[in-house]
Amino acid sequence: MAYGYITQLDKNVNRQHVRYNNRYGIAIAADIYSPKDITADQLLPALIVGAPYGSVKEQSPAVYANALAQRGFIVLTFDQVYTGESAGEPRHVASPDLYAESFSAAVDYLGAKAANVDRNKIGVIGISGAAGFGLSAAAVDTRIKALATVSMYDMTAIREMANLAPEQLFQLKEQLNEQRWEDFENGQPEYQPSFPEEPYDGIDDLPNQDELTNEWLRFYALKRGFHPNGRGAATTTSNLAMLEFSSLDYIKEISPRPLLFIYGDKAHSKAYSERAYYLASQPKERLIVEDCEHIDLYDNVNKIPFDRIEQFFKDNLA
Figure 1 (tube, rainbow, N blue to C red):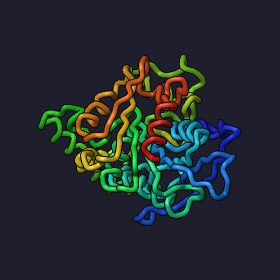
Figure 2 (figure 1 turned 60 degrees about the horizontal axis):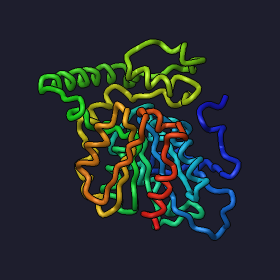
Figure 3 (figure 1 turned 90 degrees about the vertical axis):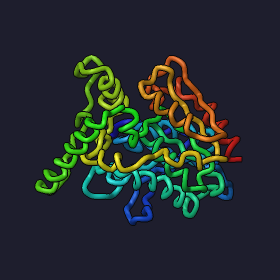
Figure 4 (figure 1 turned 90 degrees about the horizontal axis):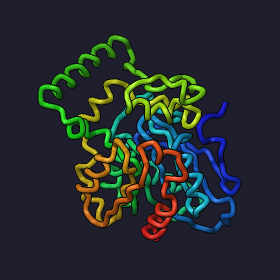
């Protein structure tokens, strides 16, 4: 059974499944979207779209790829290592270092193997949790010429955004390190998925939980955004890796390459975008979408500012 957006390919767009290795030898599964009317010798700008944390390429990245391929881009979507159709064991382990590397591995493939790609015109779109890892990659990978974040989350900003007191932070580390012993004894890491194995029939069938959980469920637990490979979250002890890494430490080094931060005025996550915007050097800009919550920018094509995204990349990949 097909889920998510994988079946909604526009008649004017081609999609090709590819596999390639990152520099650690881990195979990454990706889809490449391109305009059907492209000629064999034509070179187009390319975009890499990163999926939200715990999500896969068939979910929100497919919405962006399908739309932007119609607007003249080659678009690559991928599953993060240890997730979806990509390789890596044990499953669902998250590493900020490897997650950032996945963007550079996509640049490797687009610039060296993909047809019709102008290797000097490659940009990145990071959706939600992918935004921080995309920024981290761009800080060192000068082949990424422009980057847009959408409904940004910085998964490595546990200290800053959770505002943990020193004793709370120490307690969190203690809990995670106790879990390491349990994982070692069990022979596998603990993984607690956030979303069900099958989608609920409708919004009235969702469990009534806290406001934030309900927002996630309205996307991931309904046919709207459900995919069996996108169960959400990562292994419990993956948070130790997030505590050891800071995605935004070198964000200033992205300059003079341009940044665009897109988020909704009602997004619970807007503080992440605002913090990253504050830390970044020029050129940078913000686009705040009115009457828009975090998940609206995952799939609501009436709210996703595709015209502005197209113009931003065409201007800056020219």
